[in-house]
Length: 380
Figure 1 (cartoon, rainbow, N blue to C red):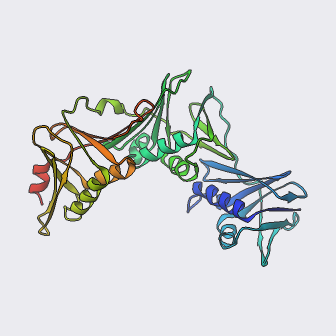
Figure 2 (cartoon, one colour):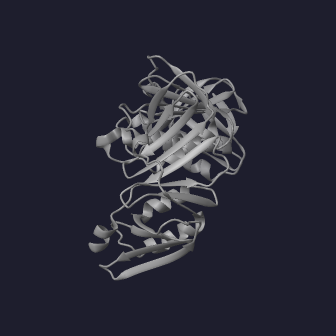
Figure 3 (cartoon, rainbow, N blue to C red):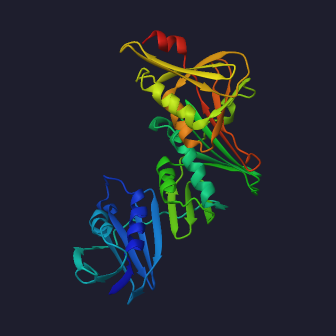
């Protein structure tokens, strides 16, 4: 049998599907893509045994149905170099020889029987369904992902929590030292649930979801979930366990509020961090009337740096220390020209928000734990 398909279309689907694969598989067939020709459609599936990403694309022509596997790396490499053109694949169903012909030549590989390829488990519990835009899901997981933990002992904190409330959706991620809470307001739902999306799933969604308004459907039970966005389907296992009460660590009424240009603040922190102790990355923020003094020191290497920025601040002078790395990560995730820092004393978490006029639809809050300036500075 044979089928013809656009070179750019199949190459982009292979690239998307490969996002779920891992470098070392216990099951050798998972180094392969599963290809299924069904009438005028090609379905490509990739998996790491826990996550299954399926991409569907139309065929230019085909003369039959087929189901076979091809080695992912072997098929992807030659397609990357081809300009947009029709590709014709000829499969010998007896020998599993697969020949790909294009305008200037051809290549031939050996496919594999698809029967050993594992299939995702079906959801067996009560199924809940949720609909939103692709941009809402992409932004929600992208903004929280960097704040998730890596400690496999506390597995639940390695993922992104999705809290479904009667009138809002909340994405949250934390590793205990920083926290992101992204709230979508005016999103009515007829049920209340909480689920934790694995870090790898969030990374895949960040890579493959377009930040547009195409509808996304989420189905899930207590153990598994399925996300459908256009031609893509992702099936995966949820992380078990109760997510920490992230709202409980968010301070209310931090008395010191400063508004500053985001890019200027990020650039100053980046320069100062280069001269800070590289193990702690501690930078000190000192606020006085209309000014932020940013400083960092590494006494072991006799280096230091300081920066002064104009800002909108008219409170009492305060001094507080934070990780320069975390400040930079937060500033890079916020896209507004200006950001607002809400600070308390040196023992209270700081809150950073974008300055936006969209607060009636969405609230984005980022929290960062302070560092003890005296102890860290004195130990350098």
